[in-house]
Length: 202
Image 1 (cartoon, one colour):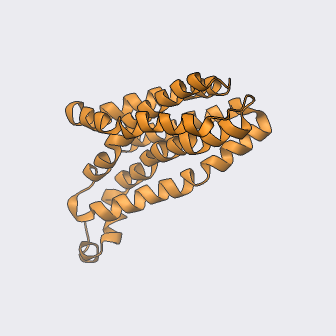
Image 2: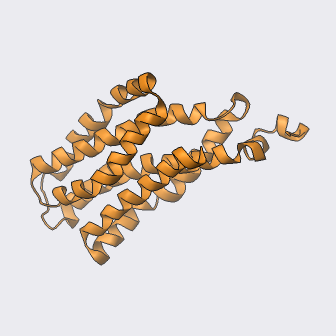
Image 3: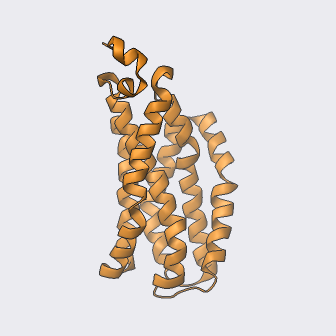
């Protein structure tokens, strides 16, 4: 039961027993979206330009074009599909394909061919849009109105702050220590966290 104090204090209400499972899911689900974006675009442009075994002079142009087509233009499409077929279904498709396919896309990008790199990043962007476009609506719909904004704020920022802020550094360390293939496991890791949050915790 909700106490009288929790009724007037949204922070206590967000951490109440009945809300903890949804709050944990709200911490886990954004990890895939935020860390996935940082890996696929923010970190990837630097990887293509300096860390790849076959660096590309046009790395930032390839990155910007793939992000424009795969993220900016495809976001509304993915969001509309989630309206038609459901948030969880669309997000699951995107999360699974992103987690399984991104290590292969990283290998393709590392070959140094600009067109192949663009195609690989575009594929990563499209699958990431399937996750990210419905995600914010899914977060809002996961909580009752009286605790919604506080719960989403806490969950999203905890997940993003802990994982997304460290992902580029971890990826760079992995590439330096074990080679570029090792960074591919990070895509699998963040996808697993997001999917577990979506299906087992939510």
